[in-house]
Image (tube, rainbow, N blue to C red):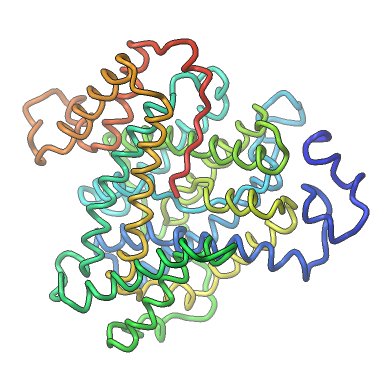
Length: 464
């Protein structure tokens, strides 16, 4: 890493300038607020996938708090691995390491939510965690062999997967916007009003806000939604009063169950997660250091992503990935110092040991959550469209995209039980539309080779 930033500390003449260097330790009073802004920008997006899954499988407030605590702790720990890599294969510089040694902030991925809902409905939380645990091995292998494997995942395929993810999530987001399916007040005027208040606040922050206000628009929208919910009598403080001030979550709280179909569908999604991490890693190095990410950095980032997701499953929460909005903060501020980002990661971990923090978010009204995340889900779909547009609409691309969406979003969304008469492999293939799009897209991309020029296109993905 000797030639990465600007020859780092050797060129730094003032301690306060260390924030623009990868290495070195700037004053804590300067580092802490710079790290805290990363936490504020990703806090809501980090926890929202847990709330969505918890609502689908019917977890009680206590279990929701545990899942949220673990999400914060795992995100902080995995961020530390990205900042300070571990050489798991020894000191040989040519072998991969666990972590990129870049200012990458990790958080719970929305990409897994549709699959988690499908698996959770069938097998409960233990089935979700078991599938996520074993499926992460695929991403670890991907990180180890990233250079030869990268050509199999062009923007066309990943764009189709993002569209599938976004459409599936928009259905769930709409249900939350209306107050939550199965609730007595589903679709009530109060719920719709709360959803729109949250949604419009976020739009205003994104349109007119600058700096951290823009990047923290989700959190600001939820705070405004909470205030209105308080005056409307929509907040239940029971969970907050019952939660303790300090608690250490126990690993394997929900246990694990291993089902082949769950493992296979999660494995397919880990490919998307790995490519998302590739995009965010390159985005950081281009913005901060004016260069592409090295193979070692990319490989380390993906392997840390895999390890963090495996740790997340052990610690009762959903898989991790590199967060796009935090890469945006790095690009905007040029603050790349590892110590600054580490203060934010430490803050996340400390919050994870305070159940009352999790309780505040666990009592969030469904309509406030829906108003906050529905724009994120729409953005995922738009990012997919942008990636497909980047690939172009050649005759070959149109055929691949048409067949992928027809088989994935068409047959993959058929009524449950429609494929019981088919071989088991096809039952697994069509059980989850997102995984189906991913698998079929990769397969068609192989049997219909792209033009050589298309292989040179880079894949930049921002799911979060």
